[in-house]
Image 1: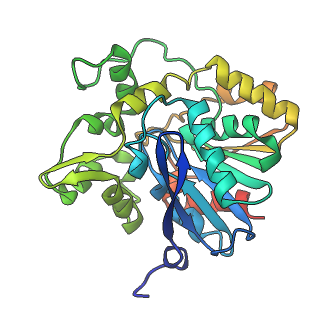
Image 2: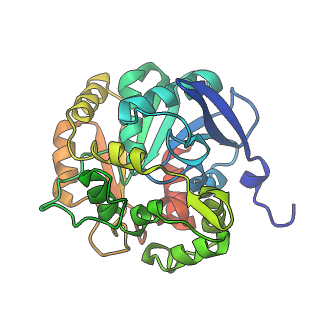
Length: 311
């Protein structure tokens, strides 16, 4: 297999019909819908290609991971966006590709979608794993400085992009080649110590178009609409309450370093403690020596995530 991992050897893609078109889905592991299954949901500007290391650490488990509406190969699906819309799309994936209750993992914004999914169909979710996401984020202390986005876009688009740093800025850029896109990301501090073929494959998949006019697949509109729901949105708080009422097991894994590998986590301790008051069954843990990205995209973090998902 030329050095290909066991998980990548089983990797394939499919589509699931949703409102407005087809949702792209990546699958690793056994080609058997009765096999132990995890549904994995990516973050705000990511794709299903953030999950291969987690899949590799789960031999014998089928990992089903969609590209959310407005991202990856689902980028052309029409709006509206928002957590409830994404949860409905992922519910269609569950109905089409899984049987019985499954474990659901969500990284970053994917954790918010996972919570909404569990509130929508608790009978199909056996447990939730929120990976540095899914709990309400503290509101910014002051408005973020506008990022260099389309000047005709609403102000909140710039605010969300600025909060994401280079990950948001790139959505308004074009790149002459895949290597140029890799070079852009090599400057990102989150991957300075963890650059790998997994990261390169994730970046290559992210691009759409043809050289020299390659663009990241996530739409600015999707990023802006979804980003507005991450800071204590009433719909998300209601979904958290529904999860608590359903008694679903819920685990939160926190990265001790942030989006730019800074020493402050995305989730301050006060935010986790506030969520624990709302969610009596919440179990929260820190994952050693990872940042917001490498908690799923570097081997150590991915193994820890997999350990919490293993049947």
